[in-house]
Length: 65
Image (cartoon, rainbow, N blue to C red; front, side, top):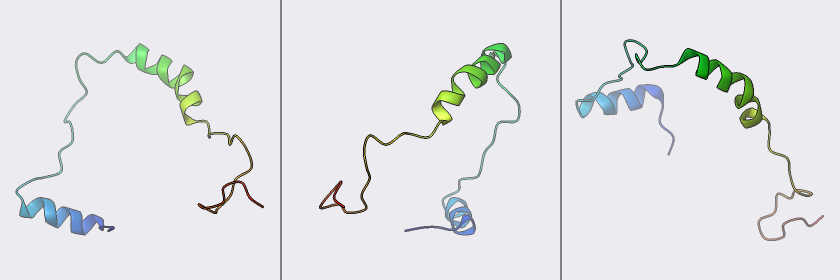
């Protein structure tokens, strides 16, 4: 079941919840470490996964042609 943003908002309000976002960044945040992670780790994580073999859309006969 897919819900629209408006529907989710109404459900939250009905239950007394609200959208909450941090007002500021954490004091403990290490900006240098964050930048290093973005440069070194994120490109590897973001890279698309490579398939190990030919793909198939069939669930019953994977890899068939």
